[in-house]
Length: 249
Ligand SMILES: O=C(O)CCC(=O)C(=O)O
Image 1 (cartoon, helix red, strand yellow):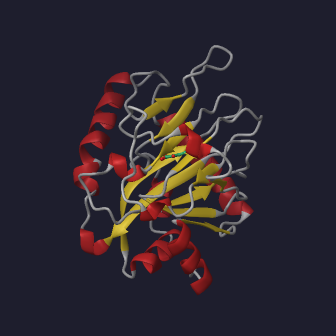
Image 2 (spheres, rainbow, N blue to C red):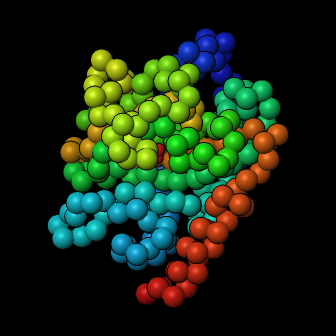
């Protein structure tokens, strides 16, 4: 079931993130990687106007490469089922002290060579209209390493509320804080998890290696804050589905 120990809970409380050793085995990972491929196939043409896709700024061999797909649970049933997997929900439920419901779902591909950086930000700066009790659970489909641009966190930043953003961007906090004296790598083997608070400042460097690092990011809120998925995601999901109907090959 993946129950966190008191020491893990204390680490999360202190740092705002937690790495959990692999809880999915190789057979399950093979199936999840196939699900990621199926998602890519069923999400429609890889063109800049596809509302479900975020495209890497840099092309590879003249081809556009997918950076992120969001939402995902309406495309591949296995990825919907996965949102209820207790290995993902139990740690978040333990931290909140009550059952959780899904708030957001996405798959980040961080492809080899062209996987681009995510500048330092707090996810809550995107979610200000909604509850601030949100935990993201990352499930690595591939090994995440410093070489392929693993996630990096500023420990303790979740205690600072929404941080200043003097960069002029609504979300980017400050590039200096990406320095190794401030932010730490959250590397982990395929099948491992990373949990982090919506207030925890995080970023990742580009992936210049020849190994991609796909990961699911499911964000959950406590059930007592309600199921906002239909309000937050419903309209966008419908738009993606309608768009696909008129752009299928
Ligand atoms: O996957 C990454 O490298 C960063 C993802 C991230 O920061 C986000 O989706 O908020």
